Length: 126
Image (cartoon, rainbow, N blue to C red; front, side):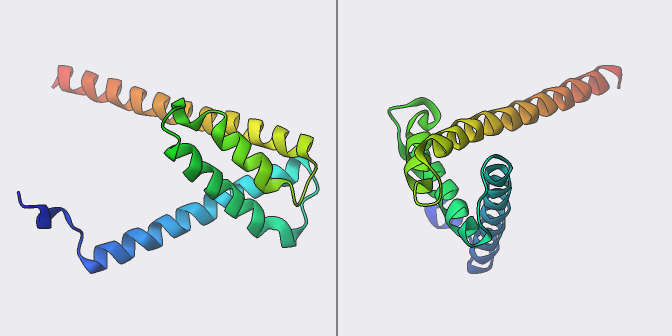
């Protein structure tokens, strides 16, 4: 396999970019909904919350010295939300968003495990 074979076509690159843009918009809006459930966030501040979530996730991902960006992501999120809420509320949102993300990752892992077990049982009986 040549390195050029690993480069997506321009059409695939556009589709991937669009897909990730939709993913981050939906995830960011879900985060903004979480924020609004805890603190009165003005509609005009939703774009900041969406951007803060994406930025904190990216910085946490790049922080290779901590597992899953633990503490780094929460710090960036707390600072990024400071213009629209008090520091204490921003820290609470950051911690709860970490727990929220972990819960959904565990649900996904549990679903994958259950599907794998079901597939394994089906293959044993075949």
